[in-house]
Image (cartoon, rainbow, N blue to C red; front, side, top):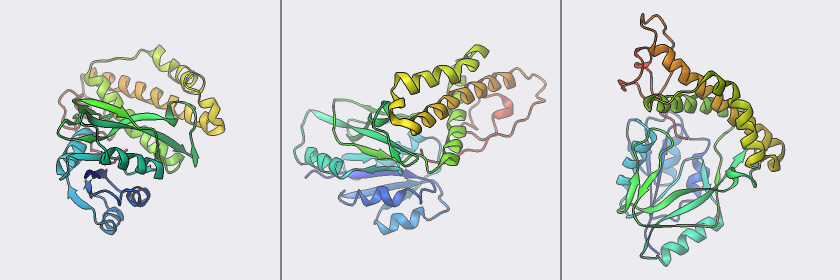
Length: 285
């Protein structure tokens, strides 16, 4: 079988990491890039003989680029710490590595959300494809601070068997991530000079709820699908008002508004002065 390196970035992932690493012991090496965990993350890594590197967090894309570059093998399997390979996915990956297609440089894995203890079997969240297994000679992650992706040259193929994504420990954890990612998203909109009207803010929840619950079929996921659709709709609402807040602060010529919020782009000169000195949040998705 061809050699492969598993690659993960971490920050305080003790709740998820053991489940993730327990399904990666067949890999030739496990590379972990940590940005200062204060819980038992590093101890768990030692239990699985991981190769651990430290790097200050400056965005998901750059962090994962560094992790891929640390791998000693050409083929890398990039997972988040809250993702778990199913046994059937492991067998499928081993099979493609055992009999590689020379024209293929990457494989997309279907990822299924587990929300409030339920695996979603309908809608987009039950089978979203992400490029997670690839030859690093053909590409690497882009440098986006959030919603990063792999830029790859060559042919890619979709695999059949799923990866389970335990993205949220509880609703409290969901709200923490909603707050963080809505800040990231509003900053990306702001830097690209995108704007949202008051009407867009008002319609963010109802329109997105219709999309998630009905159009994407989350009503088939029952009660948990309803909760998911509502919470995702609220995410867009919060992101839009944070974007409007950025423009409001930009127009505050007197500099009288000081709002203590956390974000990821504290060195970016394109942000309003009131938001330039914001503390980073080094936490993996």
